[in-house]
Image 1 (cartoon, rainbow, N blue to C red):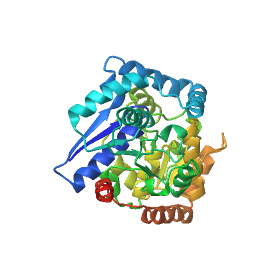
Image 2: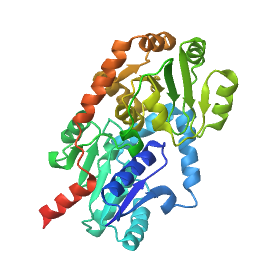
Image 3: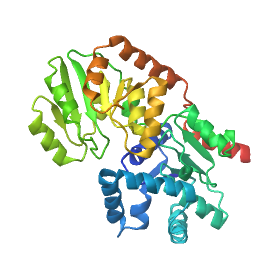
Image 4: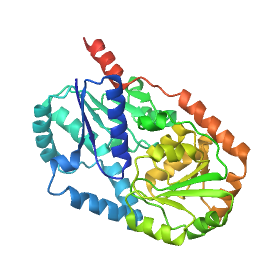
Length: 355
């Protein structure tokens, strides 16, 4: 059994989802060959650093432009360099002899779908949607099965004409480390601050100062790969435990009483699995707004919409044990509702039906 998982570094969530799916397949079938490929790096090895550098700059400094481009991409369904990508995928897929292709990135789903259409291929394609909003870029006609985070995402796909039997509410995939953590209350209260793998923590001096001044809190900050932010926070807030890139996020999350973070789809489901209530920094990217609305509607956390009130809202929630416990219980209920059928089992069912 040979599985290819296509992803990309447009934010770290797509990579994390690919790694989580890889872990799940190997846990179920240790002898399988499961390869995670960065579709941009593999197909354009000379250009991928430029492409990702432009993306990082746009997200960090021009979020309005990013949102505009995202809306345009959804409206016009443009797939750049389609012919070139189909040719490159033709060679790559021929050499790999893959039995199943999985995508955790809208772009790779579009390219693989174009490859299937051009070559008349029946190679199964599974797409894992890594946000709660099923943006039209995720919808590719060659996709055989969509794995989504929530019932609301499933309904979005059904309204766009995707057959119900092709949509599975599995939750956004998280690595095994998050699935076997158990939350334990701590004293003093533990606050974990993180902004995703790129260390995207918006400027929040007032909020951080309020946390620093609270003597009954222990604050841990994970800045990811943002080394300059790590140095800055270490200098400005010596009482904080400031950590850069780490493989132990699951342990830090499991011990936290509250997670202060951005509204990323992967981070949301990591918190759900560890039972960690969330306070979300005000979202500034389009897909994060949908994730934040979902978290608030489901009662998993609180979104800090009102500028200037962030500190009082966070401290108020930390001192409300009933509200925190209610969030944990809602997360536990949501977990029990997910379809936990492994992807290889679904692949086997499909093959049996075809036969």
